[in-house]
Every structure is written in structure tokens, then in C-alpha cells.
Image (tube, rainbow, N blue to C red; front, side, top):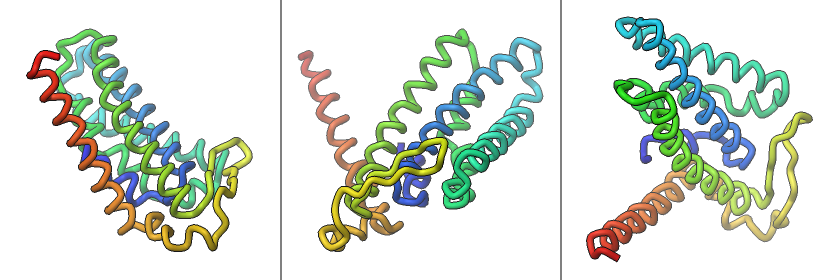
Length: 193
């Protein structure tokens, strides 16, 4: 989970940017899992690592080109971040695990991991956008839609959250809360409740 923090920290502190990263991660994970099983089906496991990296880079380039066509300003502000998502150890580690399972089992397992990261990214992006800029941004085919929630003079003390150091602090706080929740769940499981 902590490995994915870098994506949401270096991304612009906008909800629209976080949403694009979440969509990209889901796409890369599902397509990568399908591609791994395709390689297994055609019995090319020896070349799996090279072909998988090439396929993921292809997917990033395709996704980035679609993003440039639909939302050029967002694609420009995202710059290299989509490539970080593709080569992230979090995403790649799920794709390089051996597929003794069926396709559906692997898709379910990988989707569960990406769902956790998506919830985390959703929350981080939303908090950074609302409290850092006082706005709510959303993606559309006409670009990014921005709705002002708080006037500038009301959020000036919170604008630190929208910066990269503010993103580090916010991510650290969220991870601490996440770890506390996991610890409480573990205690409840051990107690048999």
C-alpha cells in the first residue's frame, strides 16, 4: 500500500488527476492479468517478463494518447506519472506471480488489491482538492470540470495539503489510520467476535 503513495503524492493535488490514476491502475492490472494468462495459454512463459513489460509500456502509451486526445491539459499536468503507475512494484508484483489459479481467481485477487489502492487514492485526491484548492474537479470529455466549494480566503491556511510536502503528510496520516484499522480488525478476529 505504501508503495503506491508516490503516485498520489507527486500527482497534481486534484481529484481529476487521482481519478485518472485510479482508472489507469485498474486498466493496467486487468489487461496485465489477461495478458499473463494469454502468455500461459500460448505457452510463452519463458518470455513472460520481457513481453509483460513491453505490453504494459504499450498500454501506458495507448492510455496516454487517449488522454491527450480527450483532455490535453490534464495529460500535460500528469506528465510522467502514468509511467510510474505502470512500472510500480505494486502493479508489477501481482502480474509476475505464478498463475496456478484460473483467470477469474487471478482477476478477483488482483482487482481486490487495486480496489484498496483506489479507495486510498480516491480519498487522498479528494482531500487534497477540496481542502488544498477549495474546489472539486472531475473529468469529462470536454476537459476538467471545476466546481468551487470554498472561496480562496477561507482555505488559504490549508493550501499546504495541495503541495507535495503536504501530500506526504496527508499520506502518512492516512496510512497510520489504515494500519490502526487493520490492527483493530486483527484483534477482533483473534478474539473470535
